[in-house]
Length: 285
Length: 274
Image 1 (cartoon, each protein chain N blue to C red):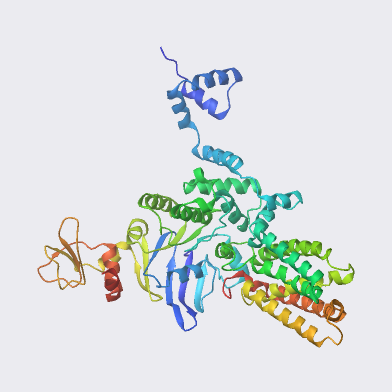
Image 2 (cartoon, one colour):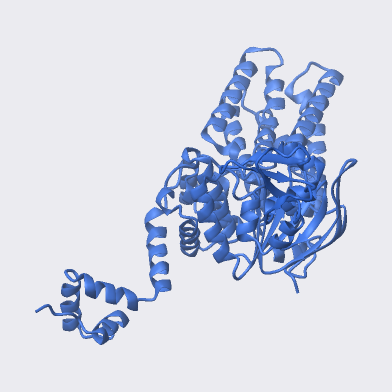
């Protein structure tokens, strides 16, 4: 049985359908949600985190129904959630803040709770700044504090909304290392704008746009969507939907390739752009 | 020739199955021998080391609690409840100072202006209301969304914070009431309305966010008091506006609000209506 099972869920806000008949299953390992702003990723993650209910359709987490109060409590005891814009009590120190969330996670024994707080701060590499006030931290460090609180209690399901936003390249690599360890024995669902994160971390990716799931498969399969549509040329190709000069001085073109094109292997990013169609090419250009 | 501790001796040392003399000898050697320290490190269970360091760090890194938290601990409140209360935005020093200032102004008006006494009695119940509005909810509590997804019941968190706000504000209003002109039962005529308004705000918070609930309740309260003052057959006074009729009415409203809150408490457990 998959940790997460979503079947035809719809979420309406007034007349807007933020989620429109989304279905998928996610088990152990990392599942990446990829999509542009407003695609419905955050709404989907909030539904999975039991923060909101779908307008229709069925959600099961660990086989339980989050609409039932007793099931919801059981789900929350096994869940770690990092929202897209986590708020902080800015006057708390890093340790105090994570300790506060540990209390919300029903860890009432002071000693055991403090050991757990130290453990998660160690996992995200924040032990050295644990006595520092949160308001004095950089944006990247705050994201790590948000990740630390999600790891409290070793949850079996981690839901992370844009966890790599605002991280510098080194922090992003460290994040990938942490995630790859954590993903070995639990389900992680994360959303991102970064196709590199998906390619590096996720055995499974779901591409969303306008509230629907356009694609579900492996990063390799996503890249294959652009097979035969990526080529190099010495001049900018006018027929390409997107064309840019690479560091080596040649043009990398994406779009319907001419017959004599020097085709190359597509990347996850190419597949993603092809999948989203004209809208994505306009954005990228 | 350099002596090194044999592996079996290091293993015995690591497990604690070694006599005190040998233990001292190995410890003295380890302080000066990198090679044996390295051999010993390889024998030590990494999990034990990590757990030990985490426990040490947890003890040494625990910061001293803030003023409000310390006060609650002295009063015998459990440390986890004290931390929940300390995170209440409307229990910050600046908030308490603002409440004190408003109450001081209310006392001044009550002593100096015609109808000032009624003004104080109408004002005092709105302060806990404002405190509750600023204690919990989206846009108010920065950890609201994390809290909703956590197993601790939001109903419990809201009640803990509302109680803390209510107690602190009522205590301040009680002190302020001591400075009202003429100390009799009228000086406490704000107390039951305070409790009823707080309960009504909590009940309404199961339908709309606490901030909006507080605005609705405060608006209704002011309308009721203004109407009562207008319809007073005699001179507008504490007795004519805040008399037995109003006190009985607010008790009924408060009990009703408590029942609604209990019946609808599950609505607070998702961020849906918030």
